[in-house]
Length: 80
Image 1 (tube, rainbow, N blue to C red):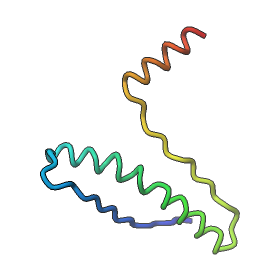
Image 2: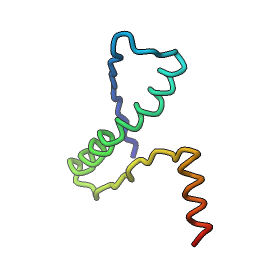
Image 3: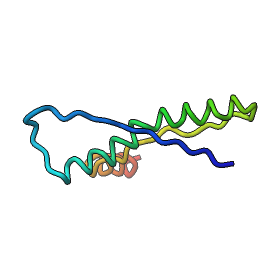
Image 4: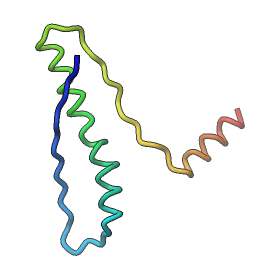
């Protein structure tokens, strides 16, 4: 089975806000996927339910840790 969906995410940039094309591209790639994931999970779950199929559980999306958070986690683990 293959389930496909297209989501359109529109963000508004405040007038005069500093930005570069690279900043906007990075923001769109990271936040676009992260912000749409709950809608994808709900859509998929509803598709399976309407078809009378067993439920599908799609895991939540976790943001990658920053370098500082990675270091702190590694330090805590090494202290244990």
